[in-house]
Length: 113
Image 1: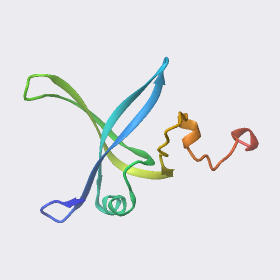
Image 2: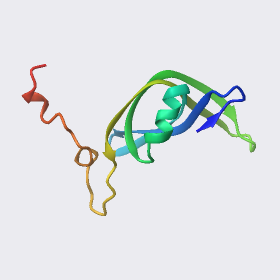
Image 3: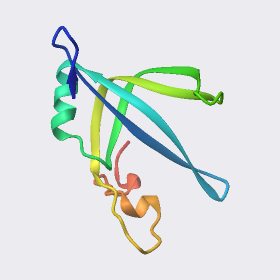
Image 4: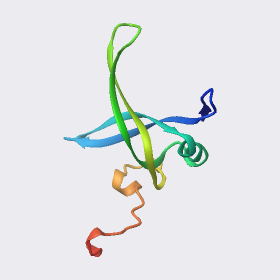
């Protein structure tokens, strides 16, 4: 966490969103920025590898690297965050993403909605 010259708290971090595409997994990275009280709370409680849901404004921008390659950056200014389960478990065995996620709701067919 850092502070702007006027004393406003700001926290920056990246999140990875993975999805299965055919027989492979594809990961997209998002640069996240939180401000003020949310920045302070995330700085204290968010740990590397922890699963979170974020909501905010998405800004997609294009840039050119020093060596002339074009790139795209996807930045999210967060206005809401929800912690979801613990850290992703590291294992030498092959476990699926659903096996590593602690689903505290249980089977959705058991719920009335």
